[in-house]
Length: 99
Image (tube, rainbow, N blue to C red; front, side):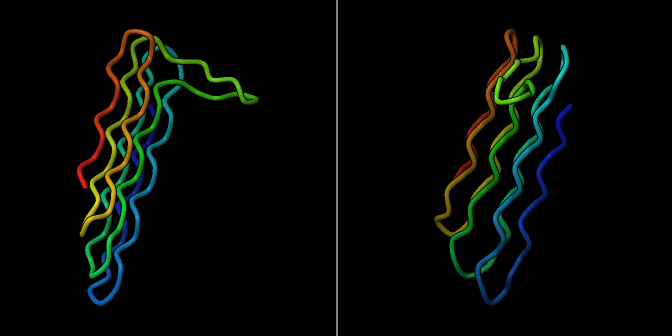
Protein backbone atom coordinates (compact mmCIF):
# COMPACT_ATOMS: atom_id res chain seq x y z
CA UNK A 1 0.00 0.00 0.00
CA UNK A 2 1.31 3.41 -0.85
CA UNK A 3 1.72 5.81 2.03
CA UNK A 4 -0.32 8.99 2.15
CA UNK A 5 1.34 12.29 1.41
CA UNK A 6 1.81 14.69 4.29
CA UNK A 7 -0.42 17.72 4.69
CA UNK A 8 1.10 21.07 3.87
CA UNK A 9 2.15 23.17 6.85
CA UNK A 10 -0.01 26.08 7.97
CA UNK A 11 1.42 29.58 7.66
CA UNK A 12 -0.73 32.17 9.47
CA UNK A 13 0.94 35.14 7.79
CA UNK A 14 2.00 33.59 4.49
CA UNK A 15 1.16 30.87 2.03
CA UNK A 16 0.51 27.43 3.48
CA UNK A 17 2.60 24.54 2.26
CA UNK A 18 1.47 22.32 -0.60
CA UNK A 19 0.27 18.85 0.34
CA UNK A 20 2.62 15.96 -0.30
CA UNK A 21 1.95 13.38 -3.01
CA UNK A 22 0.61 9.96 -2.05
CA UNK A 23 2.90 7.00 -2.51
CA UNK A 24 2.26 4.40 -5.23
CA UNK A 25 0.94 0.99 -4.20
CA UNK A 26 2.52 -2.17 -5.60
CA UNK A 27 1.62 -5.84 -5.69
CA UNK A 28 -1.79 -7.36 -6.33
CA UNK A 29 -3.87 -5.21 -3.98
CA UNK A 30 -1.65 -2.17 -3.53
CA UNK A 31 -3.58 1.09 -3.57
CA UNK A 32 -2.16 4.56 -3.99
CA UNK A 33 -1.90 6.78 -0.95
CA UNK A 34 -3.98 9.94 -0.66
CA UNK A 35 -2.44 13.30 -1.43
CA UNK A 36 -2.00 15.69 1.47
CA UNK A 37 -4.22 18.74 1.97
CA UNK A 38 -2.68 22.16 1.54
CA UNK A 39 -1.81 24.14 4.64
CA UNK A 40 -3.90 27.16 5.53
CA UNK A 41 -2.52 30.66 5.17
CA UNK A 42 -2.96 33.89 3.25
CA UNK A 43 -2.04 32.78 -0.26
CA UNK A 44 -3.18 29.94 -2.48
CA UNK A 45 -1.69 26.51 -1.80
CA UNK A 46 -2.25 23.29 -3.69
CA UNK A 47 -3.30 19.84 -2.58
CA UNK A 48 -0.98 16.92 -3.23
CA UNK A 49 -1.67 14.36 -5.95
CA UNK A 50 -2.97 10.91 -5.10
CA UNK A 51 -0.70 7.94 -5.60
CA UNK A 52 -1.19 5.39 -8.36
CA UNK A 53 -2.19 1.76 -7.85
CA UNK A 54 0.91 0.11 -9.17
CA UNK A 55 4.64 0.67 -9.24
CA UNK A 56 7.08 2.08 -11.76
CA UNK A 57 10.27 0.14 -12.37
CA UNK A 58 12.82 1.48 -14.83
CA UNK A 59 10.23 3.81 -16.30
CA UNK A 60 7.68 1.02 -16.85
CA UNK A 61 4.43 1.24 -14.92
CA UNK A 62 2.94 -2.04 -13.70
CA UNK A 63 -0.59 -1.62 -12.31
CA UNK A 64 -1.75 -3.62 -9.34
CA UNK A 65 -4.86 -5.74 -9.92
CA UNK A 66 -7.30 -4.72 -7.20
CA UNK A 67 -5.72 -1.48 -6.03
CA UNK A 68 -7.48 1.88 -6.04
CA UNK A 69 -5.97 5.21 -6.93
CA UNK A 70 -5.34 7.62 -4.07
CA UNK A 71 -7.48 10.72 -3.71
CA UNK A 72 -6.04 14.14 -4.40
CA UNK A 73 -5.64 16.53 -1.51
CA UNK A 74 -7.65 19.72 -1.22
CA UNK A 75 -6.31 23.16 -2.07
CA UNK A 76 -6.94 26.33 -0.07
CA UNK A 77 -7.53 29.95 -1.00
CA UNK A 78 -8.00 29.20 -4.68
CA UNK A 79 -5.15 26.71 -4.91
CA UNK A 80 -5.75 23.69 -7.08
CA UNK A 81 -6.85 20.34 -5.73
CA UNK A 82 -4.54 17.39 -6.30
CA UNK A 83 -5.23 14.91 -9.08
CA UNK A 84 -6.60 11.49 -8.21
CA UNK A 85 -4.28 8.57 -8.82
CA UNK A 86 -4.81 5.96 -11.50
CA UNK A 87 -6.45 2.67 -10.55
CA UNK A 88 -5.30 -0.89 -10.87
CA UNK A 89 -6.86 -3.20 -13.42
CA UNK A 90 -10.01 -3.81 -11.37
CA UNK A 91 -9.75 -0.85 -9.02
CA UNK A 92 -11.35 2.57 -8.79
CA UNK A 93 -9.50 5.75 -9.77
CA UNK A 94 -8.85 8.33 -7.09
CA UNK A 95 -10.99 11.46 -6.83
CA UNK A 96 -9.58 14.88 -7.58
CA UNK A 97 -9.25 17.20 -4.62
CA UNK A 98 -11.36 20.33 -4.42
CA UNK A 99 -9.82 23.79 -4.88
